[in-house]
Length: 273
Image (cartoon, rainbow, N blue to C red; front, top):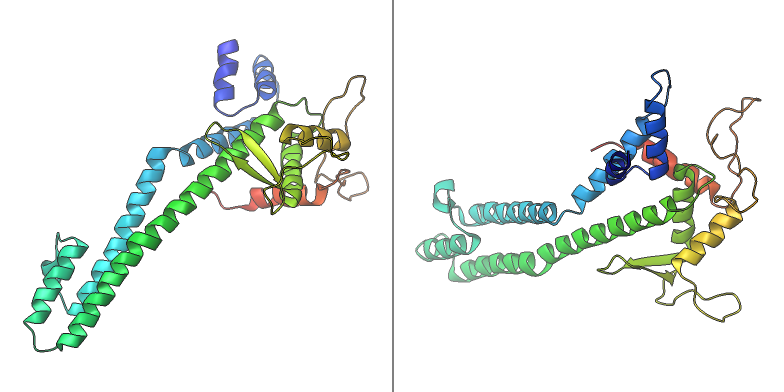
């Protein structure tokens, strides 16, 4: 049984949900809905795939090839080269060929030739110094965002929640994005800063710093998201977006509720890759 639970956890399903699934599987008449588990597992695997170095390298290679193809076409158009003349040549080889061909042609003046070659060389320089580094920066930023979301997911999943994960997680993310900036190091340690600064948040009495875990615990306690000793049932957030007796939708009763609901609806309506 433990191996099955470990497998499900590896696929991105929490231990609590795994136990519920196993228990439901023992009763063929049980109508346990596995759709949310399939979605969670799919999203988990998608994040792992997007964070795979091999996949990132392939992305950069495809982008590099795309840009080189654009440059090659522009060189062909500028210097009137044929497809056979540029076939299997690098950008630098095409430029050198164009230089030789243009020098022997009377259609262009020497000054115009120099200007064309300078423009071509500047384009190659811009590609090497700006386009590729910019794409790499985008990839790195995307990887960091995924890593931060993964670590936040682990933190929230490790809590004894009294509300659905789909309500707790976006509420926390919205709260953090309003007040803080997050960073992550190579050891996947999260660091929290005050919004727009490199200053760590401090306790209200200024006696020390507070970390992400303390912020999470404080907000979840304030929102009654986690189980407390001798505590009763949590807020009725399992009926988010479902019709109430009077035909109206029940409202979330915690700070950030509207943003959380909007985020959940946006995720549901987003196109699937």
